[in-house]
Image (cartoon, rainbow, N blue to C red; front, side, top):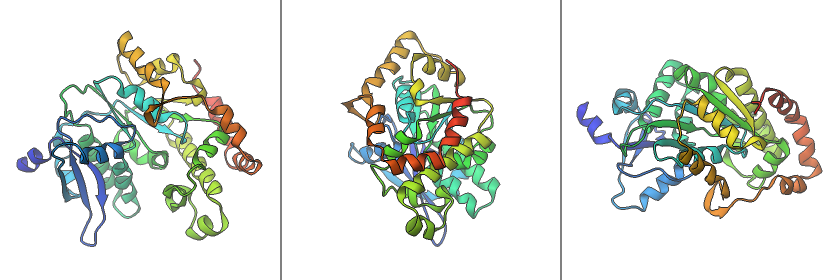
Length: 319
C-alpha cells in the first residue's frame, strides 16, 4: 500500500476507462507542475508536451484504497453554473493567487458520479470523495485553498456531491437564457447535448424530434432545477451581470478565503482577458448575443427557461 501511495504521489487522476474486466483510472504526473489552464483537460494535454511526461493506469478501486492517503486539501468551495455564464472567469480569478488550487471542470469526477447508474450509491460517494482528495494534492507546496468548478451537467449529481462533502459552500452562476443559448449554439454538436442523463430524454427524441437547441434548453433547465431543489443552504446565487469587486468579495467570504488587497487586484485584473484564452482581450458581448438570437431561439428560451430564470432572479445575492 505504501509503495502505491508513493508511486502516485503528485499524479492526478484525469479519466476513467471502462473495460469488460472492470474499470480503470488514468493518472498524469503533475509533480512540481502548476495547473494553469481554464479547463483541466487542457492541462493534461499541455503536460504531454512538457519534459518527462508520465501517465499510468490503475484499477479504479485504487482510488478507494489510497485516495484519502494522498493528503489532498479539503475543498473550500464548489462552483456550479448554468453554462456560459462566467464560471470559468471566476475559477480563473481565484487561480490568479498562487495559493489557490482552482480546478476547471475535471471530467473524471463526472465519470465517477455517473457510476451511480449501475453501482452502489455509497461506493460511488467514496470514489468521488477519493477523486476530489487525489486532485487536491499539494504538489507545489504552496497550495492553501482548494476550489472546484464543475461542468454544468454535474449539478444533476448534487445529492451525491453534498453527501460526500456536506459542509462545502456552493456558488451557482447563471445568465440571461437567450445569451446562454446563443453561446452554446455556436457548437451545436457538443456531446452533452445528446446525452440521455443530461437532457432526460431518450435517443429517439434527442436525435429525431428535437433540435440541438431544444436539447440544450432542457439540459440547462434540469441543471437550474437541480440546484434549486438540492443546492440551497450555505450557498450564493449570482447573475453574470453582477460580476464586480463586490461579488468577488462575497464569494471569497462564502468560501472563507482570505486575500490581501494586492491579491484581490490580481484576481480582478483577470477580467481584462477572455476567460477561455488569456491571449484574447475580453469584450462585453451581451448586446451582440441578443442581436444574434433568432425568433426561434427566443421562443425556446421562453418555453424552457424563463420561469426558472425568474426564480433565480428572485433568489440571487443582493450586493
